[in-house]
Length: 86
Image (cartoon, rainbow, N blue to C red; front, side):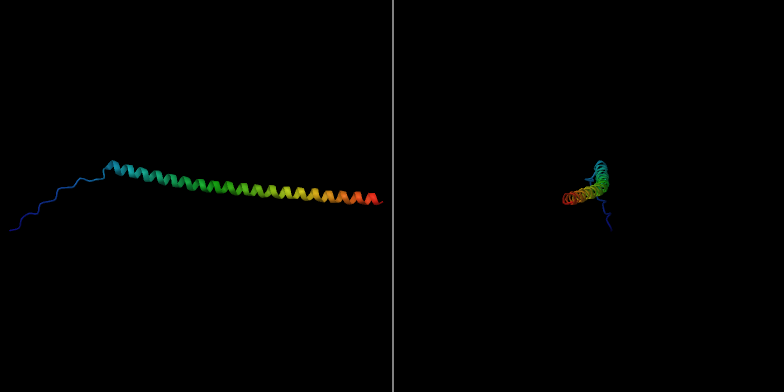
């Protein structure tokens, strides 16, 4: 004769619904922070590129101004030398 196999008693679950909800909230918060960090990196990169372009333009303007000043100084010196020899 076969004896009925007793069903095992259900073991208490060590993870409660509150723990699962807390883990879901933590994962959602971490994903939000990751997306925010990626957006901040892209914005900072764009600002960095704009500042680099501005710095380059200012450097070229300053170099052009100094070149014009040097050319003017040379022209003035040549004209003074020619007037002194004449």
